[in-house]
Length: 260
Picture 1 (cartoon, rainbow, N blue to C red):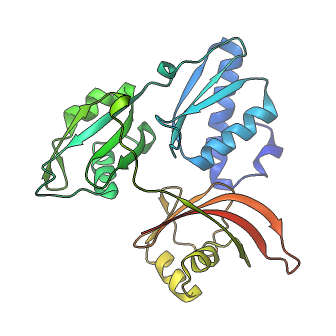
Picture 2 (spheres, rainbow, N blue to C red):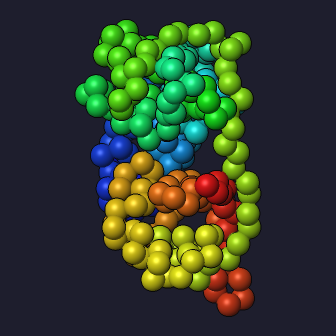
């Protein structure tokens, strides 16, 4: 990968950038499509930037439904016409005694990852408040189904279902335009949730904040386009668009916000 490309992204994103370079090379040399694991929005943005900049290849994202947050990407030569089946995404419902127990996104995800399978094999986990469904990479579905008999202390099993039975997810993002003095993690959190910088620093330093699904304990971490921040007890924030600066040098940002 050309050294100049790295400077547009974070140091810790280099490994991912190198992987994208390998995928592009593979499609170009074999002249056949390549399917990625599930990518988060930031990874999808990096992949799209690199493909547009570095090749004539095409790409399509698919995560099971229109608003999916995590999606697989098919990278392919111009001649190829992708179908939904190419993405190898299966939909499963979690069966559990819902009258006596309740599940949460965190519990389900913890159980899935606890089977030893990496996060990138799972797409979105959606719920209407009672029922729960999961998008899974087809190549590991049988293993996962065999492994899952409990979620936390709750007896549970995964059943494959048709896309026609997909739930309407209850969580909906609202869009909010705002200005922030800096794109620092603590600054953005205190702006959106209207809490003091001190409080947002405490939340970050005590491990209650994740950026792109990874715990981040640095208040001075600089957020970039399409990052997703989860704050335990508060909700989530996505940096949807960076819209330049105001006269007073504040950043104008379009945020996606999910409030608990």
